[in-house]
Length: 443
Figure 1 (cartoon, one colour):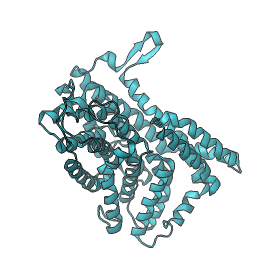
Figure 2: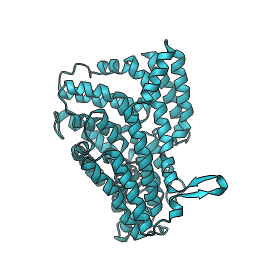
Figure 3: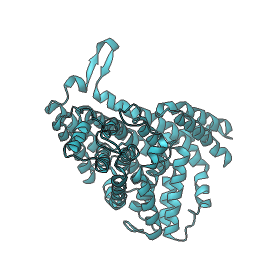
Figure 4: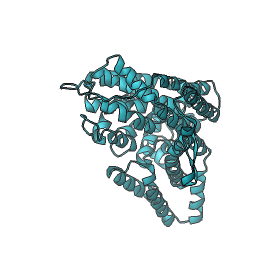
């Protein structure tokens, strides 16, 4: 077991060091993964078997699904961002005169809407943070709760959106459909989200005179762009294939943006003769998914040998997820397993993929339904990675606070501790496991 886990020790140490040094980009973690894979290969008693297990991990069908989702959703997010959706939403909140805690709550709602529409927490932070956080100076918002609200809204979509990578991974590993999974997840997400809104609104008021807010150059017509991700969500909830829904979203976003004059054809795609290549929003969107895609492939190569070695089953058995005497114990074991995997791999989706098979077998043996298992997996990985300061979401959220006029720069720890939605999920998970509240243990 020590030898099987040694590569992950190398990986976690390297990623934590880079993250705390201020390298919040998956590309910077690639060399660390290569080093971890080399460590595992050097320690393997059968290097050929280890190499084959690496390839098995990378070729998992769900990994392919994730790569397609990241690439296509990246295009949708790129088009939405360039068309001015976030400034339009920000200006709408400002127009109705929300201030203090009301502005903080509105910021969370804007980010929740964007993250649900795009399925990406990282993209939401980078799209919304640079606009919403500086504008808080003019709205008398407290810096910590405001930054936490941005991160909380981004977390909300990651935990609920039908095109979120964690939703796709959790439903796929448990053999259930995305639409049913999202419907069954609503009570958990809405309970945590409602509590988070109340907390952030209560503590979101700042002190002192408001500063002058910078103009956002918002175009109200950009709000029509929200129809594109809405179409994707409707199609998925009606049982259409993920790829079909995403391709429809790409087509709709481009058609609306071009039809309303929010973008020009040259912005969408054009030929750069000087660079002997193409450029434009479509390429930018695809490139958004490259970093996380390569990171996930390499990380799944690290997980493959761990699966083959049987270490995950041994850890699950030691943690009480073996022959579970009750559904409650099995559910607690699933939450504990995927939480440990998230802390070990530092990647929410890979954590689900790593323990999904084990969680499915243990859950089925205890009579726990697929939707319930998928929800436990998904909600658990949307907690600690969104509050602990050495994970990417708090690091990215802290990054957007730097350089904001009249607003202070915050650390990842300060932002993470104000992520009221993630802390709300911790409470919701605890109540759900202990009492069986939610969709029912056997659904």
